[in-house]
Image 1: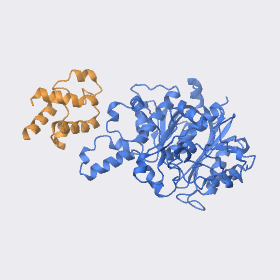
Image 2 (image 1 turned 180 degrees about the vertical axis):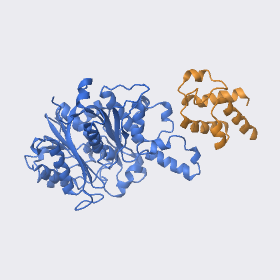
Image 3 (image 1 turned 90 degrees about the horizontal axis):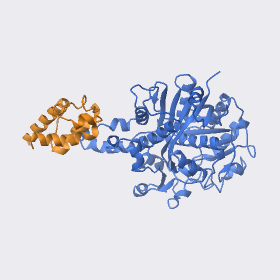
Image 4 (image 1 turned 90 degrees about the vertical axis):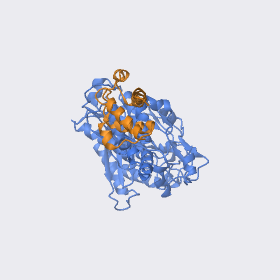
Length: 424
Length: 84
């Protein structure tokens, strides 16, 4: 029998809550992390609101040494280390200062870019012929694997230490990669997650594509409106989510808290064929990703109690719902509950999949479905497909057993994971 | 600036980079940056930049490669200061 894989630790640095306790409180109570962004306004972005984790200097000092913070200018690594270390501690795993690496533990911590502000700072110095004055940490802060390298060193990880990158599916993909590695018997536990930098230099390209929300600059908390008729683009976000993915046997031996089980999942691509392109999803591939995830999890589509969608608040939300109805062969009143975290965090891009997976696992562990704020006016194309009650506006007490989580990204890439409440 | 003053100034520069406080507290001319003070070799680059700023001198790559202990560092700084 193949190994069972479970989640034993959670950590998060989200725009609406840094740390699991604050984040859990925020998602249950519909607390938004979207704020007006002065820098985006000064730079005349069309979208001047954003989601950024609020990190105090005291919190930074808990995770980084004074020396590490000298010349430190990488928000992605900052969020990733905070979330990753929290997940590790939350899993009851020791942070030892032993001489030997922990051969059984690794990290797969994704990112879209790294240290983009450090990069900008360096580019100015280079062009001023000051390359020799860059200092010693530019490489570590700007290499894409910076976040996994920082985490690997802080935790003394001796198994695989890597960073994956697949646009907005990055975080979900990282969890699947961890699941695969543990199933293959190559590691006992993997710290899986993803991070995303904050700021104009990461978000500008999306503003230029005219895909960001620009009509709510004076009402930030109303700006991110997944599935709503008045949705008009996503709100850029950032942060990091982290999950300790572990072999069930090892988790039981340690007496660890088990937050949920990963039954299976799938990653694929639409190959930018059919209606797929660099920026749009091939519906056939999306549906195939979901049906493959269901079949390799050994469940039927009818067993899914809830969906945590990708649902960014662009014109593609209705298409995503349509793809779910086709993949599950469930519609109207028979459709599962569905929600999108992005109404409270914005679209955290490469961090989205991991932060949203943390939210999904919290729902299973604690028995609730968080509400979709800003969706009082459900899009008519969506209400034509599913019963509007399946899109709860406020958090409901429920006891979901199985939740499907999917993420889709530029490059026509898809990932879907089936999480289940843990039952021995 | 005499040798003692240079060492005192250098000691302050080195402080954030060392992880061996005992060796740091007992720093002498013979103290080696990497072997005694457990300074990460990549941080030697940062120490050089800090020295350049503090003493208003420029240290070229050849000198930098030799600057592995307090004694050599002081010699190089003295030479650079004399050239000013």
